Image 1 (cartoon, one colour):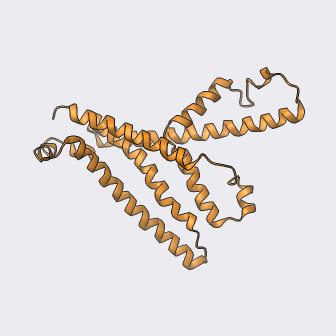
Image 2 (spheres, rainbow, N blue to C red; image 1 turned 135 degrees about the horizontal axis):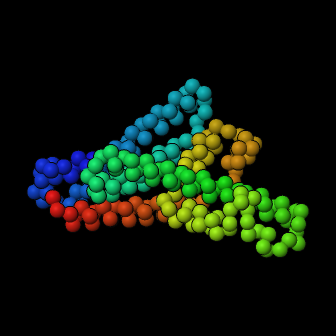
Image 3 (cartoon, helix red, strand yellow; image 1 turned 90 degrees about the vertical axis):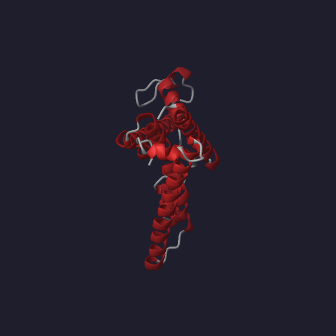
Length: 222
């Protein structure tokens, strides 16, 4: 949407209209978001109805996929919009969104793995060596210095919560089809970050990315 908008001739057609550039870009973003929301709603609701009719499983948690997937798309689309404004290249905008998706997934996955190993270490240390010195906890079983764990946790906390949204999606599906025993066996009974924190951090990044895109769109020539 955005690189096509910035093409010579297309942009000239838009800027002569009585609408600001930032407002125009925001409408483009909202339009794409609405399109994905409608598509996601139809797809998820359709799958939910089919599963309910064929298998007799009516799990309302499954419908949480609609806002979860829409918010995840909103994060990646904000990245794509910013890259599109900076480069005016549709392929680069797509690659930027894919890179953001991969980076958020990797950071969240590594943070979860490090946290799980650290928890297991602490439990073993308390059971086998309750009197161990604090220096023993400065290096984890993964062979990583403690500052790397701290940095990874800070990144996972401060970046958009793509990995948390993915975990919430998995939890929503699992709670609809698995028993309590199966949920516990698969680790889906563990607490997840609060919804307010996940949504708040993600929305803050969306506003920041769109704000930068609008500022660049307003200040660039042509």
